[in-house]
Length: 486
Ligand SMILES: Cc1cc2nc3c(=O)[nH]c(=O)nc-3n(C[C@H](O)[C@H](O)[C@H](O)COP(=O)(O)OP(=O)(O)OC[C@H]3O[C@@H](n4cnc5c(N)ncnc54)[C@H](O)[C@@H]3O)c2cc1C
Image 1: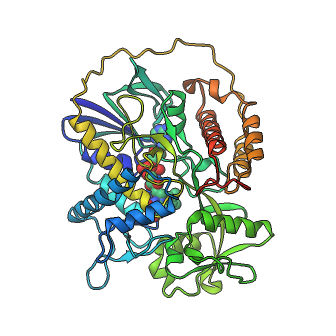
Image 2 (image 1 turned 135 degrees about the horizontal axis):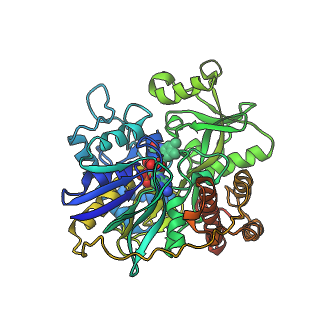
Image 3 (image 1 turned 135 degrees about the vertical axis):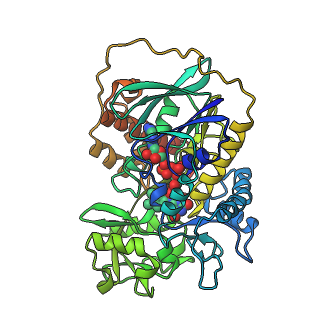
């Protein structure tokens, strides 16, 4: 029996759990409940080239163009060719993607896609519908909810499982032949983010602490349209709304993206920088939805959220928005089979970087990447001839006196991150930020000695340092890594 530990119950982790063969004993560990992940929040949909007139080659072209050709072309090719096979399989299994009145699949449009190729489910609740559908396929898996992985267990240069803090707060080793990180990105490094509260860069930080290779950390995607009220984010306003005809305006009704060739559907980094520049001139930002008929019917989830936060959108046709952190293109470096630089350790979904997204992710490609990377990990693990033996001695570190953590206040860290490694960066602020981070001892702390709050701040500091160093190391601005003057 192969013992597999999967960390994270978003779409990537859940899809893998549903597709490992019966000779695997699978444990699925997740920080809160199976309902808490970014996957559950995905609104726009899943990009897949299956419509008449569309092709894998066109989807690949759009992905490479958005990624500024920094992508790994082989990973893009794998995404656009394997993706349609997996989506058709899900359809055959009964996944209820939305259809037109003729019973055909309904394809939506999003920024930087050359044609309508985004599948939705329950309107703007695709992530929820898809992740729940996939979780419904999982059988014979031991769920460990409300459980946080704090470190990897390493023996003889191989990953042999994880150290976790269980629901009662106890530290326990969980040994495994294969460990898969599916812990998502790092949105909570920034003060405004679309991400679920559990997404604090944990997988990236624990990989870094154990010398596992990372890649492309400079590239963080900021989404132009976060619903904001009184300086707080109350969720995402999906790009599909701009695909349906909404435009970005200021308090005077000026069309902010008027002078750009793709207007409101320009790549996210372009839109976000323009919005930031507008903000700096002292303007307020809105999404003008007056061109969309039947808004409530087309976007039921967004409408419910707007009602919940008392946004009077039906009367004004305006939704107050601001840009904020959304997605991490970089992460744990993997090959096309999701294998990391550490034997027996895999990474899938957003925490991984196989280069598919390049310097900027094409909208709605990440749910597809979750399926494809998890599919590849399942195939590799199930055919692996590596010895299975959970009794391999893992050296536990001798009990050491607790190192007193010296960490920044979370709000201070987030504000510094937004200023220094946000939408617009400069070489000077990047260097100043690294000097500021160097005052703290997050690199020397032992994760198992920290409280949940301390660990999440330490993990975010690790991610912040990785982003700043990676941004400084790039020879010029590219995609989401925009360095003023470079
Ligand atoms: C609001 C929003 C809308 C989006 N819309 C779209 C869209 O329309 N189309 C698209 O393609 N993409 C979209 N994205 C991006 C996409 O949803 C994510 O990239 C994708 O779902 C990531 O899936 P994942 O399985 O890799 O990680 P996640 O779904 O983020 O899951 C990570 C899991 O790991 C758990 N975890 C984290 N750390 C630990 C730890 N230390 N121990 C144990 N468990 C841990 C988390 O709790 C969570 O369960 C959106 C993202 C957001 C936030």
